[in-house]
Length: 191
Length: 191
DNA sequence: ACCGCAGTTGATCGGTTGATCAACTGGGCC
DNA sequence: GGCCCAGTTGATCAACCGATCAACTGCGGT
Image (cartoon, rainbow over all chains, first blue to last red; front, top):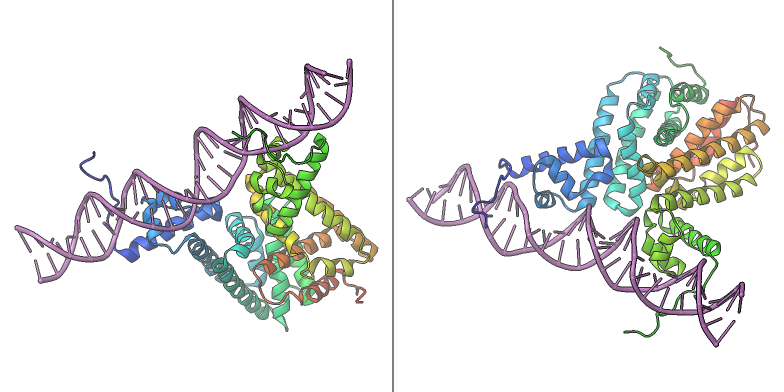
């Protein structure tokens, strides 16, 4: 019969603790995928009991959806600072973002069974579509919407392929750029 | 103390039982995804005890890999009978194959943690690449390999997007055909 | 007629999961 | 100075997982 309950983590105000938990969950998902999000593992990473994670979250489905939105949103904010559609495509396909790709693929796979996640996925795809349209318009594309849509499909497709280590991913970017130039009918900056 | 162990399924020879179990597993994966493959659920579907499934299978990872290969192989055999690259693209993007798409996306997502599955995925992608190259060559493409690669990416990408019900999938095929014609620099049959 | 073995069962084990909740704690307000 | 409530713990529950294995069954060969 222990006289004291040991080692409660430093007390935080509700919203701050919730933010800390979400940050821990995001880091965990980035290093091991959305499937690693369990109450216990998130709690461990946040230095907190599993029950506390459950207390600040409205079920695992909601946690997963929120973490996905956070990861995709952060990535999008980074890429939004890149200028030129060619540089954007190169950034998105250079293989340095495998962790994010895994999260996306897991999100599509889980979407049919998690309505909240599906909603978040659609919202993020809308945002990405908008970002690509903007870059294409800047590059002189007269009708960027359909091109952006196909481009987004190409990027996500070849990145997903990379998860199984299929062939060289080094030549993804040149391949996509060539396809994109064909669709637009105009040359793009090739730095 | 029951005097008899009830209702053993009709006795089958080893290889036949194994085939029946694999068929049941394939049906289950097609209707509920690879994630639904558990010893108990496969056994239930096959009308057989869970232990028997385990007896005929070398671990769940192997089962999943085998079922994936079977599903993709069957689909490929069907599509191989379609003539003309335009018809192939239309067949692969008309939204009637969502079940197979879910299996593919789940396979990519699970590949990093299942070496046997990853191997099967790579083998199937090689086969699909070959099929598309052949159709492109028939259509008059002088250098079909890179085009096939991008095309496969586009198809898988837009299909994955469809899993989250993103926008109309009705316009996928025309979009892809337009992109493909741009890449090839030649018009394709539009029935 | 019987016997051996291949086919089959289902209970069982150790493990993990999401969720719940009584109990404990500590800081700030009265 | 005492109390109260927000924050926190960790045990606990039911459900499910893969894997294992002793026990049972029935067909084919002798």
